[in-house]
Length: 368
Image (cartoon, rainbow, N blue to C red; front, side):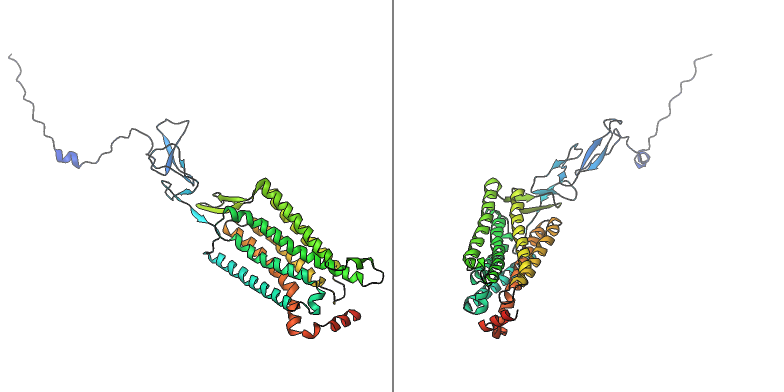
């Protein structure tokens, strides 16, 4: 037998168009997707190092590259955008004069300042009338001047906080308000002394006059000045930035420094207001010819109610609304003192002048 025949291999035909027309999946070498910017890699101990999850960055932090393991915290004056891949400037917030709320409060404060100045002008013009004389002119002038300054003082709380405004806000307000409340207290004590001195053989006759009321006013105000001085020396207020109260906002505010100093100042004012209310309540049954006590009692009741309600409202607000609440309390309490104590007298001066005579006052005192 001869050798087997040689077989010639058949040619291989490759259909390139069929190969490229087929769909196929490239095998992956990792078990997790790549984390885009705005996310960070979170590894698990019980899984391979190449297996991880992508977690979004928290508010205020970003990642600007893919597959970053840690988020970057934005600077204090910036905040993260919605995609968490870039820092953007925070919204600056404070009660400004351009803000509608600031405009409204400024207008109210200016209006009451002008109104109080008008009442002071009326009392100066009619200073020799029996009604004005019977209610202690000097203390009336001091109270009206302090109320005018109280209305102006509220404007210090509006505008961008600065070192000067932060130093003056609470201290000037507390000293001026102490003067106003001390004037009310002095007027009430003067009423009691004047009535007691009318009794025969009374030892209060030596205290009749303006010296007691002036000394009381000066003493009460100096105590508040001393408290404010210690507060400023130990830990004075300063401009501060609050970036934690509201997301994406930078609240410009005044840090009060020593909390004890602030509470001491406010507590002293509250003590004087409560003392004035108690003394006025005791004196409210005095004869009408000498009696401002009923008006003072109501005004101090309104005053205390406003500031008691101010505490929860102040603590429950943030940002510019917190400042607005304090301004509203200042304006409301000051307007209450002005309206309750002085408007009835202006009514008698202009509309019932027959009551503004010595004869009428003495007759009413005799009937009482």
